[in-house]
Image (cartoon, rainbow, N blue to C red; front, side, top):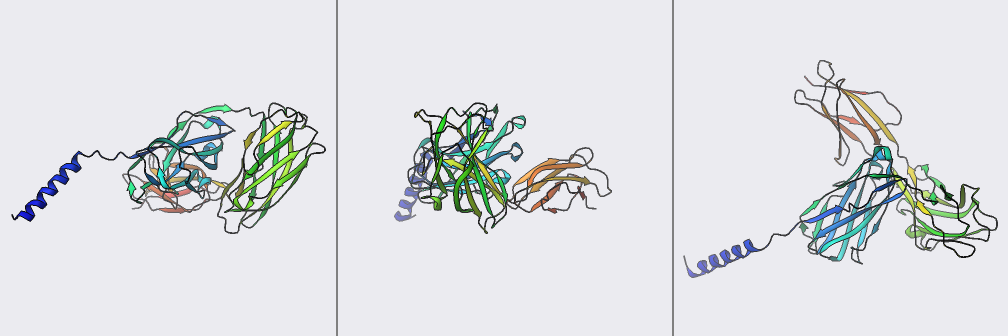
Length: 400
């Protein structure tokens, strides 16, 4: 071996030894804060937490939950642990199926340690079907973390099971109606100011902002509602409607009175864009351009909870029932049935002693494939399209 080769071997050995003593990079960890509970009927925050060595440029993931609980996605807000230059992109195309995709990008990079990145706001929930499991999943946005050089970093995820704390008593509620629509249709939603179990506490003035996804909904107009205290005046700040936000101010000298359960201080008209896919589009509340304020004539502050509404652009939920049979026509028990959507996401059921399987709350946002797995028989894959109502059961026969 000549001296040049010897030196190369020595350098290589030194590099291998040096690499072997370097600590392996710990994978980033995405988790959900476990200190909160769902309050049925109220907005709930799902806090997204990242624990890492820092230096991440892009973090993407999806969250998934059981749509049978009637939990609905509302919006995503950045949290204090995200750098000031963070850009967040939300894929809401699958929220009707109980999942939402999120991508967060920072040119300067995310810091080290444990930090709250975002708060996913949800609404609803039925106490009788809790607990509710929230998990990190790969659809519609894959789980991925890259560093400042756009190289992939290892990542692990952990979801969390929320319990319910029953039905909240919000006192007073600002809410937006829910309405069915189709692409290209113009719809008008009323903004309501309602009392729940308490009263209006002498409120005379209320201001707030509502927001929507301008990619799917185009703002057309806002007007005073048809039910306000005498002498009240409704004004609107339209400076941010291109960004999907509208400010509303209600001023007057006559208070909202407790004998009226629900006032309608404003109406907002949207057109569903012709390119909008089938989906649930939330209309929620925020503090910009007009911050939330409510007070009595003497200036005493009063408060209200916020409850979003939705424009339902053609979403319905099907009930799918079927039966799995052997090649000879007998019912097959304990067969595994998978309902797979066009993203590859699976829902699983097991046949009972009659060979029957059931899938509830199947949204019409995807074509599906039914796959049957059995140790004894082979089965054809069956295409399925969600149909409203109660269609006839599907029979799936084993192959000879």
